[in-house]
Image (tube, rainbow, N blue to C red; front, side, top):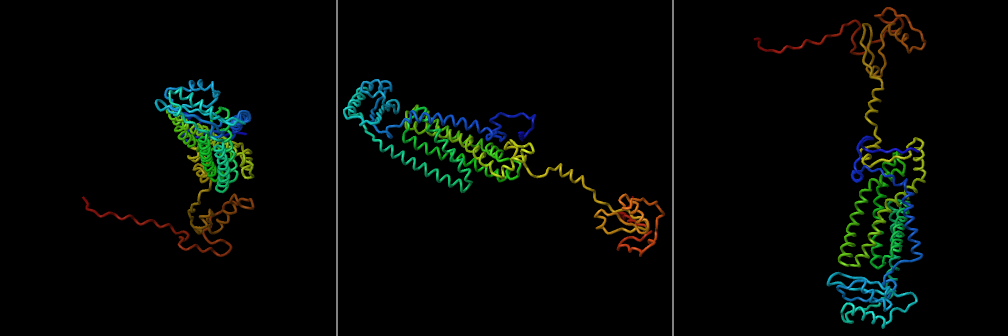
Length: 464
């Protein structure tokens, strides 16, 4: 199996930097035929995440499991100081978070409800409040205590699952109607990939799962499908245009489409990820907005996974499905028989007409020059007659009156009897047998000299 590539320039042309080639449409990445590498990387992350889910599970916040939370203004207090003060009370494993910064800094302590536990008693809650008040030099009444039940988080989870199911059904119907069902299958598999990767990373790194995380997670699914639909739309257009010529297999059509949309996908992902990084760095780390951290972290993981799946999962999977169709299977077999099973072509080369079906000018010139030149009218001899212009235009030789014409026909190289007659005297009269042929109208009579053109008129002027 041979691999051909088409790119503007030439073999000796200097290739620009990879980034410039990307934005000038000169990339020829073979995404589909390297799908085993992409699938293996995704499978490794998913398997590790599932193993972590089965052993550790997710780190749910207090809204999902229930518990008690304490919050108090604590400028100048650190997390280590708060944790050291709570260890003697048996709350060393509580979640301690510093909110805000400077004079507006506050301390938030969350004690989750353990399994088969009745929760924090009123006495224990009062002891924790008193300890935090002493640590921050505040009165005990300034410490707010809140009990959270697990029913609120379970309701959010139930609604999120329902929304996810409806989302997948509607998206599958939409893609099947406006594209095709094989594209719908590839898109849904990419969405499932994003779900498993995001959940697995949260379990592996023990990130806290909050209601903000669920909202961000549902937002990411829409973005992942949006990028996938953009790639599929380009694949559909190229399969109807370039794919209909039979010069490209469906795998090469998908590769071309992905190279055409690669710069756009990268730009879109970077534009979406850079503000999220700003939220995580400025909002969460510098300003201490923990809620933004939970929301931005889920968006960052989901957007990265969605950009990856739309390029390396959905499109190669679609190519695998379409290559089993009879039409594209025949195209692939025909190209393999010609030795052109793989054709990597850059978008710039396609825009320049590398796959144009029009016949090149050189071949047209060769074809025109190989044909016979149009016959010119023969010069009449005395005693010969001119045939009609239609016969001369068809390439037929003009016939002469008398025996000379018959001798010329018989003595030509194309005569049927194969004999060549000896040349004889030219006949000026009618042939020996049959009636004399009447010359066409307007033809000069035999033996009449051709008329000369009239003399050119002289210009009148004064003689010097």
